[in-house]
Image (cartoon, rainbow, N blue to C red; front, side):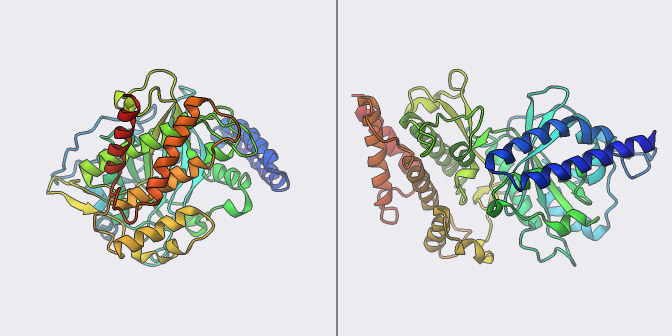
Length: 470
């Protein structure tokens, strides 16, 4: 029986390799079709024939011991994991005292599972209950959409981050996240979870081991369906290193990122694109997207002296609204919102919070240690990075909400480029004119003399709306 299962698994992987090889020779639409076909194949085959676990299945698993340290309780909405609780099903990795001490900054947070799981066993349990599809790759992490097998259509999002090693191989790799930066991201996710417009955080886990097949195969297909310049690093060394540490973050599914919605053919696009050559969008959706992003940033500024510092289109997610807005505050500037906007990814963000219940302190990423970030060209977001460095003078701990204004200006400029040409109704013309006036004000801001923060922009928009309704 074992021989038959092994042969079926070998046949399956051979099929995948042939599909990926063919995909590289196809056009963009062909690549998308290959991805769809592979998704259908992957949903049943890999998990069915994948070996269960390398370790002894009869090994007694020890229950997680409570930490003696006093933990802070963060007042936020409780989030359940997608559809199951792994509990003691997953083997725990044996780590030495030095590694445990190295990971201690993460373990001081109640949101982080207090033990390290064996990656292969973790993947076995998860892939039994869920299917993985890779949807994005950034410099510091990969993002997967995870669908419940028991409840098809129920999704969660997982972000996988390779952690920088304490010593030796991987200890100086810039693409790997430091323990302090990982702790900051978890703490920010937990704090911002309280606020409307930010992603709902569920849990965090530390994993040890090689990248398992359940996540590697979706990564292969993702790379095969990307433009050549967009294929991201695969962290080759980390994927094959048996002692590699990873941080897995589970969050709610916030929908489709704005960059994808504006540039790709989607069967259920949350925005109403038309005129395919230019990908135009209606004025009301430009207004809805900008207003919700500005409102969320203003709220976070006020509560946590928050700066996002990396708010490109890939970090703004959209879902189509099926009914009334879930939050009436959205209607201050928008009559009937057409999309719900969620801000994600706080890797480079800055805020003052109290994650340990011992007094608030600033969490930030010292970007002066990453000079390559400011050398990019070809996209407007790199100009924003340089604007931030100029106004902060490389003091990344400092609160400077003008950085939020820079990102909002960048966002509105990109959205306004999607304005359709030709005749418009009088209502549409008036709204486009209002948006154009706001864009001009933001561009002529002259180092914050008119708008020094997202809160200033929100007050201005509310004032314009009030005058227009009189």
